[in-house]
Length: 94
Image (cartoon, rainbow, N blue to C red):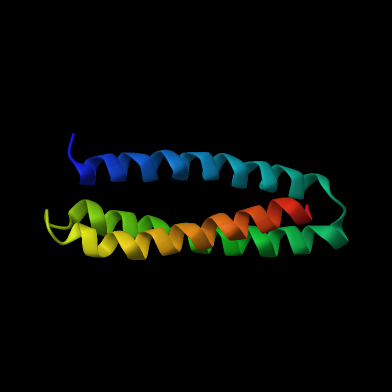
């Protein structure tokens, strides 16, 4: 397995982990009172948006040539860090 494929596999696995955590937040949002549900849903929407951005960058890496993917890797790692920080923040609040 080459470095690019290993990186893609690692990021895909992380995405699945975060999907589960976002699902957990969504389930929790369904069980809270209406006044708190708005804050949950706002955070969840932001997480979905950041996740979509990260998935798009991962797709670009998958489609990039052998040399170009390394240039895209930094952008994906920044998106990943933003997503990860946002999810940790959301989990700590709720």
